[in-house]
Length: 476
Image (cartoon, rainbow, N blue to C red; front, side):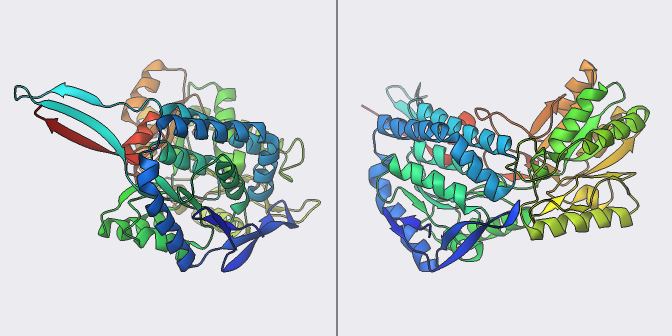
């Protein structure tokens, strides 16, 4: 059994849960601990006790530790990538790529530990000195989703530790293997007892304990809108600092002047790779009337050439859906779209492969409108709706007509329209002639509207959440 790590010790859970391979339902990856509330409380207490020493630790020691973690992740990328793909279902190249990203993030924040600077400015009062510095928050609760089981934990844990915070980490119950492996690497790198705590378990038990405990100064969460809103309601009541990354209904606008090959590549990559299980996935394809038919035909042809199979098999383009619940949700929304008047132009059926798994052919709905539930609600699977528009003005209006605002893309050869879209699109991240999914690790990540709440993640902007600003006045 894979145990939790609390206060410097490996602790058996109150119960266990099996980690199942979605490509092969007979493959049990392992038994992982589930903590109860008492164990979560112990982890929070351990983090609180460790904070005074860790917050005052040498920035060089923190830099060395984070860099060592990053080096170990990169050295083990093939092994860890295989584990990730086995438990989550994204293809092996995608799994290895995600592991590499996690290693790069730790190394980046190893450098950032040495670059945190303050300011010294003149006061309006003669002889008075003014210093502006950043200090760690305290104990940070980190709650992560199943779709990026090592990268998202990395981009939350690394900055938290970098800036001198202690961590209570609750990974998604569905994919504990990558989180456990990452935690073991952090622990073996020499993290002091109590500074980092792994508490696997149910959100209703471990998650609630973290959210409601006043000893937890801040909460960084990535997951569904419903869960994010529930966390916000509880945490704001006790004035905890919050960082919430939630859903998306991301548009990819394809204008009449677009390069067709580029448009198809952006749509396939953004909407269907990683089985569409990305918060930045292109679930709304907003297409100009003059290119619409050619785009749909070319996209359908490309979808027909993709291989949907076991995530670990060479040549697989799209792996399985992560579990039965998500598969049912995908199928339900495909049915909803059809009942609302959309046409299932390609795919959408479950598939049988050599091993029993949660396989779904990528689904393309055409004749959709932006008013349909399938166009407004996050599906989180390999399902995209095509919405025909008459011109750029209508395309922009449709793209912005959503409760979400994470990522938005446009495919065009017009510099005028590209520049206008970058300014007027109501999303946190804008892509021009690129898929809506796929970002760099050294720049800010986050959205607007219902997609995000609180300071941005990643890059130097991570300090806005993981530190607090202090202004000090001195009269020598």
